[in-house]
Image (cartoon, rainbow, N blue to C red):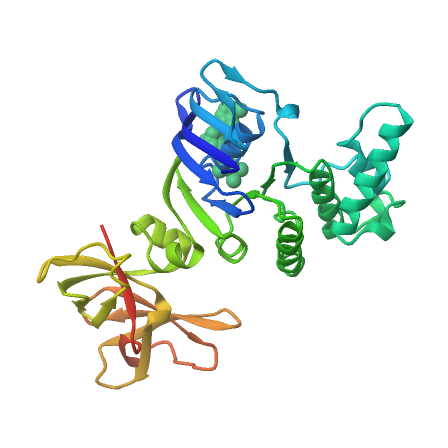
Length: 351
Ligand code: ATP
Protein backbone atom coordinates (compact mmCIF):
# COMPACT_ATOMS: atom_id res chain seq x y z
CA UNK A 1 0.00 0.00 0.00
CA UNK A 2 1.20 3.45 -0.79
CA UNK A 3 -0.92 5.44 1.60
CA UNK A 4 -2.66 3.99 4.62
CA UNK A 5 -4.83 5.87 7.06
CA UNK A 6 -6.03 4.11 10.16
CA UNK A 7 -8.81 5.82 12.18
CA UNK A 8 -7.37 9.27 11.50
CA UNK A 9 -9.07 12.26 13.14
CA UNK A 10 -8.48 15.98 13.18
CA UNK A 11 -10.69 18.59 14.83
CA UNK A 12 -10.57 22.37 14.79
CA UNK A 13 -12.35 23.47 17.97
CA UNK A 14 -15.78 21.87 17.82
CA UNK A 15 -15.47 21.06 14.09
CA UNK A 16 -14.53 17.45 13.40
CA UNK A 17 -12.93 18.03 10.00
CA UNK A 18 -11.75 14.41 9.70
CA UNK A 19 -13.56 11.91 11.90
CA UNK A 20 -11.97 8.47 12.16
CA UNK A 21 -11.09 7.89 8.50
CA UNK A 22 -9.48 4.59 7.43
CA UNK A 23 -8.29 4.29 3.88
CA UNK A 24 -5.72 2.38 1.82
CA UNK A 25 -4.46 3.67 -1.53
CA UNK A 26 -2.70 0.98 -3.54
CA UNK A 27 0.62 1.49 -5.28
CA UNK A 28 0.07 2.86 -8.79
CA UNK A 29 -3.55 3.69 -8.13
CA UNK A 30 -5.34 6.93 -9.03
CA UNK A 31 -7.60 7.50 -6.06
CA UNK A 32 -10.12 10.33 -5.65
CA UNK A 33 -11.68 11.70 -2.49
CA UNK A 34 -14.95 13.30 -3.48
CA UNK A 35 -17.16 15.42 -1.27
CA UNK A 36 -18.93 18.75 -0.89
CA UNK A 37 -17.26 21.93 0.29
CA UNK A 38 -16.24 21.74 3.94
CA UNK A 39 -16.47 17.93 4.25
CA UNK A 40 -12.79 17.69 5.24
CA UNK A 41 -11.11 16.70 1.94
CA UNK A 42 -8.28 19.22 2.10
CA UNK A 43 -7.63 18.47 5.74
CA UNK A 44 -7.33 14.78 4.85
CA UNK A 45 -4.75 15.61 2.19
CA UNK A 46 -2.86 17.94 4.51
CA UNK A 47 -2.70 15.18 7.13
CA UNK A 48 -1.02 12.89 4.57
CA UNK A 49 1.35 15.63 3.41
CA UNK A 50 2.27 16.51 6.99
CA UNK A 51 0.87 20.07 7.06
CA UNK A 52 -1.53 18.98 9.81
CA UNK A 53 -1.04 16.64 12.75
CA UNK A 54 -3.75 14.07 13.50
CA UNK A 55 -5.43 14.16 16.92
CA UNK A 56 -5.77 10.40 16.68
CA UNK A 57 -4.95 7.50 14.38
CA UNK A 58 -1.95 6.81 12.15
CA UNK A 59 -0.84 7.80 8.65
CA UNK A 60 1.62 5.63 6.69
CA UNK A 61 3.29 6.39 3.36
CA UNK A 62 4.90 3.47 1.50
CA UNK A 63 4.55 1.27 4.55
CA UNK A 64 6.31 3.73 6.87
CA UNK A 65 4.34 5.36 9.69
CA UNK A 66 4.70 9.13 9.21
CA UNK A 67 2.20 10.39 11.79
CA UNK A 68 0.61 8.84 14.85
CA UNK A 69 0.95 8.65 18.59
CA UNK A 70 4.61 9.39 19.35
CA UNK A 71 5.45 9.41 15.65
CA UNK A 72 6.10 12.43 13.45
CA UNK A 73 7.97 12.64 10.17
CA UNK A 74 8.36 16.16 8.77
CA UNK A 75 6.59 16.92 5.44
CA UNK A 76 9.83 17.29 3.47
CA UNK A 77 10.89 13.78 4.51
CA UNK A 78 7.66 12.04 3.47
CA UNK A 79 8.40 11.65 -0.26
CA UNK A 80 5.07 13.22 -1.09
CA UNK A 81 4.52 15.62 -4.01
CA UNK A 82 1.74 18.17 -3.89
CA UNK A 83 -0.24 20.04 -6.57
CA UNK A 84 -2.61 22.77 -5.42
CA UNK A 85 -5.72 24.41 -6.83
CA UNK A 86 -3.95 27.65 -7.65
CA UNK A 87 -0.58 26.98 -9.15
CA UNK A 88 1.99 28.23 -6.70
CA UNK A 89 4.86 28.73 -9.14
CA UNK A 90 7.63 31.19 -8.35
CA UNK A 91 7.12 34.11 -10.77
CA UNK A 92 10.83 35.03 -10.83
CA UNK A 93 12.00 31.51 -11.75
CA UNK A 94 11.84 29.98 -15.23
CA UNK A 95 9.74 26.88 -15.84
CA UNK A 96 12.83 24.71 -15.49
CA UNK A 97 13.89 26.60 -12.37
CA UNK A 98 10.46 26.04 -10.83
CA UNK A 99 10.47 22.33 -11.58
CA UNK A 100 14.07 21.92 -10.39
CA UNK A 101 13.38 23.78 -7.15
CA UNK A 102 11.99 20.75 -5.34
CA UNK A 103 15.00 18.57 -6.20
CA UNK A 104 17.51 21.25 -5.22
CA UNK A 105 20.48 19.63 -3.58
CA UNK A 106 22.53 22.71 -2.70
CA UNK A 107 25.15 24.67 -4.62
CA UNK A 108 27.45 21.82 -5.62
CA UNK A 109 27.78 21.44 -9.36
CA UNK A 110 26.93 17.70 -9.34
CA UNK A 111 23.75 18.50 -7.43
CA UNK A 112 22.91 21.28 -9.87
CA UNK A 113 23.38 18.93 -12.82
CA UNK A 114 21.13 16.39 -11.16
CA UNK A 115 18.52 19.08 -10.52
CA UNK A 116 18.55 20.11 -14.19
CA UNK A 117 18.21 16.60 -15.54
CA UNK A 118 15.41 15.73 -13.08
CA UNK A 119 13.62 18.92 -14.12
CA UNK A 120 14.01 18.12 -17.81
CA UNK A 121 12.75 14.56 -17.37
CA UNK A 122 9.69 15.80 -15.51
CA UNK A 123 9.01 18.51 -18.10
CA UNK A 124 9.22 15.92 -20.84
CA UNK A 125 6.67 13.85 -19.01
CA UNK A 126 4.18 16.72 -19.05
CA UNK A 127 5.07 17.69 -22.65
CA UNK A 128 6.62 21.08 -21.79
CA UNK A 129 10.34 20.40 -22.32
CA UNK A 130 10.39 23.00 -25.12
CA UNK A 131 9.15 25.71 -22.74
CA UNK A 132 11.73 25.32 -19.97
CA UNK A 133 13.07 28.86 -20.47
CA UNK A 134 9.71 30.57 -20.22
CA UNK A 135 8.42 32.31 -17.11
CA UNK A 136 5.08 31.44 -15.47
CA UNK A 137 3.33 34.58 -16.78
CA UNK A 138 4.19 33.46 -20.35
CA UNK A 139 2.17 30.25 -19.97
CA UNK A 140 -1.53 29.43 -20.17
CA UNK A 141 -3.41 28.33 -17.03
CA UNK A 142 -3.36 24.70 -18.19
CA UNK A 143 0.39 24.84 -18.88
CA UNK A 144 1.03 26.31 -15.44
CA UNK A 145 -0.83 23.41 -13.84
CA UNK A 146 1.24 20.97 -15.90
CA UNK A 147 4.40 22.70 -14.63
CA UNK A 148 3.08 22.34 -11.07
CA UNK A 149 2.55 18.63 -11.76
CA UNK A 150 6.05 18.32 -13.23
CA UNK A 151 7.45 19.95 -10.09
CA UNK A 152 5.60 17.41 -7.93
CA UNK A 153 6.81 14.49 -10.09
CA UNK A 154 10.44 15.68 -10.37
CA UNK A 155 11.29 14.54 -6.86
CA UNK A 156 10.05 11.03 -7.74
CA UNK A 157 7.64 10.99 -4.81
CA UNK A 158 6.00 7.82 -3.47
CA UNK A 159 2.68 9.56 -3.80
CA UNK A 160 1.34 12.66 -5.55
CA UNK A 161 -1.40 14.58 -3.74
CA UNK A 162 -3.59 16.83 -5.86
CA UNK A 163 -5.93 19.33 -4.19
CA UNK A 164 -8.62 20.45 -6.67
CA UNK A 165 -5.91 20.94 -9.33
CA UNK A 166 -8.30 21.85 -12.14
CA UNK A 167 -10.80 24.07 -10.39
CA UNK A 168 -9.24 27.39 -11.41
CA UNK A 169 -9.53 26.46 -15.11
CA UNK A 170 -12.48 26.90 -17.44
CA UNK A 171 -14.65 23.91 -18.33
CA UNK A 172 -13.21 22.81 -21.71
CA UNK A 173 -9.62 23.20 -20.51
CA UNK A 174 -10.46 21.38 -17.30
CA UNK A 175 -11.80 18.38 -19.21
CA UNK A 176 -8.82 18.13 -21.58
CA UNK A 177 -6.21 18.70 -18.88
CA UNK A 178 -7.92 16.10 -16.71
CA UNK A 179 -7.36 13.45 -19.36
CA UNK A 180 -3.77 14.62 -19.95
CA UNK A 181 -2.95 14.53 -16.26
CA UNK A 182 -4.40 11.05 -15.99
CA UNK A 183 -2.14 9.84 -18.83
CA UNK A 184 0.91 11.59 -17.33
CA UNK A 185 0.31 10.01 -13.93
CA UNK A 186 -0.20 6.58 -15.47
CA UNK A 187 2.91 7.02 -17.60
CA UNK A 188 4.93 7.93 -14.52
CA UNK A 189 3.37 4.93 -12.72
CA UNK A 190 2.61 7.38 -9.95
CA UNK A 191 0.37 6.69 -7.02
CA UNK A 192 -1.96 9.66 -6.81
CA UNK A 193 -4.61 10.89 -4.43
CA UNK A 194 -6.85 13.64 -5.77
CA UNK A 195 -9.43 15.58 -3.79
CA UNK A 196 -12.31 17.22 -5.61
CA UNK A 197 -15.93 18.31 -5.18
CA UNK A 198 -16.57 17.56 -8.87
CA UNK A 199 -18.37 14.23 -9.35
CA UNK A 200 -17.57 13.97 -13.05
CA UNK A 201 -13.89 14.61 -12.38
CA UNK A 202 -13.67 11.92 -9.71
CA UNK A 203 -15.70 9.35 -11.63
CA UNK A 204 -13.86 9.84 -14.92
CA UNK A 205 -10.33 9.97 -13.56
CA UNK A 206 -10.04 7.62 -10.63
CA UNK A 207 -9.60 3.87 -10.31
CA UNK A 208 -11.40 4.12 -6.98
CA UNK A 209 -13.39 6.88 -5.35
CA UNK A 210 -13.99 7.59 -1.66
CA UNK A 211 -17.07 9.70 -0.99
CA UNK A 212 -16.70 11.97 2.04
CA UNK A 213 -19.35 13.67 4.14
CA UNK A 214 -18.90 15.60 7.40
CA UNK A 215 -15.43 14.17 7.98
CA UNK A 216 -16.39 10.54 7.33
CA UNK A 217 -16.26 8.28 4.29
CA UNK A 218 -19.69 7.05 3.20
CA UNK A 219 -18.41 4.66 0.52
CA UNK A 220 -15.20 3.54 -1.19
CA UNK A 221 -15.19 1.70 -4.50
CA UNK A 222 -14.66 1.82 -8.26
CA UNK A 223 -16.54 4.69 -9.95
CA UNK A 224 -19.07 2.39 -11.64
CA UNK A 225 -19.91 0.82 -8.33
CA UNK A 226 -20.37 3.97 -6.27
CA UNK A 227 -22.49 5.49 -9.04
CA UNK A 228 -24.67 2.46 -9.75
CA UNK A 229 -24.80 1.03 -6.25
CA UNK A 230 -24.52 3.90 -3.78
CA UNK A 231 -24.33 2.88 -0.15
CA UNK A 232 -27.05 5.25 1.04
CA UNK A 233 -29.42 7.99 -0.09
CA UNK A 234 -27.05 10.83 0.54
CA UNK A 235 -24.26 9.22 -1.51
CA UNK A 236 -26.75 8.41 -4.27
CA UNK A 237 -27.85 12.05 -4.39
CA UNK A 238 -24.37 13.48 -4.20
CA UNK A 239 -23.15 11.47 -7.20
CA UNK A 240 -25.98 12.59 -9.46
CA UNK A 241 -29.74 12.96 -9.71
CA UNK A 242 -31.68 10.08 -8.28
CA UNK A 243 -35.26 8.96 -7.65
CA UNK A 244 -35.86 7.15 -4.38
CA UNK A 245 -38.94 4.95 -4.78
CA UNK A 246 -40.79 2.89 -2.21
CA UNK A 247 -41.37 -0.68 -3.29
CA UNK A 248 -41.87 -4.33 -2.43
CA UNK A 249 -38.94 -6.70 -2.87
CA UNK A 250 -39.57 -10.05 -4.59
CA UNK A 251 -36.34 -11.97 -5.05
CA UNK A 252 -34.07 -9.95 -7.33
CA UNK A 253 -36.85 -7.59 -8.41
CA UNK A 254 -38.63 -4.72 -6.78
CA UNK A 255 -42.20 -3.61 -7.59
CA UNK A 256 -42.61 0.15 -7.33
CA UNK A 257 -45.34 2.61 -8.28
CA UNK A 258 -43.47 3.19 -11.55
CA UNK A 259 -43.14 -0.50 -12.38
CA UNK A 260 -40.73 -3.33 -11.81
CA UNK A 261 -36.96 -2.94 -11.51
CA UNK A 262 -34.23 -5.53 -11.41
CA UNK A 263 -31.89 -5.27 -8.50
CA UNK A 264 -28.23 -4.62 -9.26
CA UNK A 265 -26.26 -7.91 -9.30
CA UNK A 266 -26.58 -9.95 -6.15
CA UNK A 267 -22.96 -9.60 -5.10
CA UNK A 268 -23.53 -5.91 -4.55
CA UNK A 269 -27.16 -5.76 -3.57
CA UNK A 270 -28.10 -5.83 0.05
CA UNK A 271 -30.27 -8.85 0.86
CA UNK A 272 -33.90 -8.12 0.12
CA UNK A 273 -36.36 -10.06 2.20
CA UNK A 274 -39.08 -11.53 0.00
CA UNK A 275 -42.15 -9.33 0.06
CA UNK A 276 -40.45 -6.81 2.35
CA UNK A 277 -40.93 -3.11 1.83
CA UNK A 278 -37.79 -1.39 0.67
CA UNK A 279 -36.52 1.86 -0.81
CA UNK A 280 -34.87 1.80 -4.16
CA UNK A 281 -32.57 4.38 -5.77
CA UNK A 282 -33.16 4.67 -9.50
CA UNK A 283 -31.10 6.97 -11.74
CA UNK A 284 -33.09 9.21 -14.14
CA UNK A 285 -31.55 7.42 -17.14
CA UNK A 286 -33.12 4.14 -15.98
CA UNK A 287 -36.59 5.47 -16.85
CA UNK A 288 -38.30 6.03 -20.18
CA UNK A 289 -41.17 8.20 -21.36
CA UNK A 290 -43.91 7.89 -23.94
CA UNK A 291 -46.44 10.53 -24.95
CA UNK A 292 -49.76 9.19 -23.65
CA UNK A 293 -52.97 11.15 -22.96
CA UNK A 294 -53.91 8.48 -20.43
CA UNK A 295 -50.39 8.25 -19.00
CA UNK A 296 -49.41 8.28 -15.34
CA UNK A 297 -47.53 11.59 -15.18
CA UNK A 298 -47.30 15.17 -16.40
CA UNK A 299 -44.17 17.05 -17.49
CA UNK A 300 -43.69 19.98 -15.12
CA UNK A 301 -40.20 21.10 -16.11
CA UNK A 302 -37.62 20.47 -18.78
CA UNK A 303 -33.92 21.24 -18.42
CA UNK A 304 -31.95 21.16 -21.67
CA UNK A 305 -28.32 20.26 -20.91
CA UNK A 306 -26.78 19.85 -24.36
CA UNK A 307 -26.12 16.14 -24.56
CA UNK A 308 -29.29 15.25 -22.64
CA UNK A 309 -32.53 16.64 -21.25
CA UNK A 310 -33.67 16.25 -17.65
CA UNK A 311 -37.44 16.08 -17.30
CA UNK A 312 -39.20 16.73 -14.03
CA UNK A 313 -42.57 14.97 -13.89
CA UNK A 314 -45.44 14.93 -11.44
CA UNK A 315 -46.53 11.33 -11.06
CA UNK A 316 -50.23 10.61 -10.46
CA UNK A 317 -49.28 9.40 -6.98
CA UNK A 318 -48.10 12.99 -6.25
CA UNK A 319 -44.34 12.43 -6.23
CA UNK A 320 -41.81 14.18 -8.46
CA UNK A 321 -39.92 11.91 -10.84
CA UNK A 322 -36.73 12.78 -12.74
CA UNK A 323 -36.13 11.28 -16.18
CA UNK A 324 -33.03 11.82 -18.31
CA UNK A 325 -33.27 11.32 -22.06
CA UNK A 326 -31.10 12.08 -25.09
CA UNK A 327 -31.65 15.67 -26.19
CA UNK A 328 -33.32 14.61 -29.45
CA UNK A 329 -36.44 13.66 -27.53
CA UNK A 330 -38.56 16.67 -26.66
CA UNK A 331 -41.65 16.56 -24.51
CA UNK A 332 -43.48 19.77 -23.65
CA UNK A 333 -44.16 21.16 -20.22
CA UNK A 334 -47.79 20.27 -19.43
CA UNK A 335 -47.74 17.19 -21.66
CA UNK A 336 -49.25 13.96 -20.35
CA UNK A 337 -46.79 11.05 -20.49
CA UNK A 338 -46.36 7.46 -19.42
CA UNK A 339 -43.23 7.00 -17.31
CA UNK A 340 -41.92 3.49 -16.74
CA UNK A 341 -38.68 1.58 -16.22
CA UNK A 342 -36.46 1.43 -19.30
CA UNK A 343 -35.67 -2.03 -20.62
CA UNK A 344 -33.59 -3.99 -18.07
CA UNK A 345 -33.69 -1.00 -15.71
CA UNK A 346 -31.62 -1.47 -12.58
CA UNK A 347 -32.05 0.03 -9.18
CA UNK A 348 -30.29 -0.38 -5.90
CA UNK A 349 -31.66 -0.67 -2.39
CA UNK A 350 -30.99 2.22 -0.05
CA UNK A 351 -31.77 2.80 3.61
P1 ATP B 1 -13.41 22.96 0.38
O1 ATP B 1 -13.76 22.06 -0.78
O2 ATP B 1 -14.39 24.08 0.57
O3 ATP B 1 -11.98 23.37 0.39
P2 ATP B 1 -12.90 20.77 2.19
O4 ATP B 1 -13.78 19.59 2.01
O5 ATP B 1 -11.53 20.70 1.62
O6 ATP B 1 -13.64 22.06 1.69
P3 ATP B 1 -11.60 21.38 4.68
O7 ATP B 1 -10.87 22.56 4.13
O8 ATP B 1 -10.83 20.17 4.96
O9 ATP B 1 -12.83 21.02 3.75
O10 ATP B 1 -12.35 21.85 6.00
C1 ATP B 1 -13.14 20.96 6.78
C2 ATP B 1 -13.73 21.72 7.97
O11 ATP B 1 -12.70 22.10 8.86
C3 ATP B 1 -14.43 23.00 7.59
O12 ATP B 1 -15.56 23.15 8.44
C4 ATP B 1 -13.40 24.08 7.84
O13 ATP B 1 -14.01 25.30 8.15
C5 ATP B 1 -12.64 23.51 9.02
N1 ATP B 1 -11.22 23.90 9.02
C6 ATP B 1 -10.29 23.54 8.11
N2 ATP B 1 -9.08 24.07 8.44
C7 ATP B 1 -9.26 24.80 9.55
C8 ATP B 1 -8.39 25.58 10.39
N3 ATP B 1 -7.10 25.70 10.12
N4 ATP B 1 -8.95 26.18 11.45
C9 ATP B 1 -10.26 26.05 11.75
N5 ATP B 1 -11.13 25.33 11.02
C10 ATP B 1 -10.64 24.70 9.93
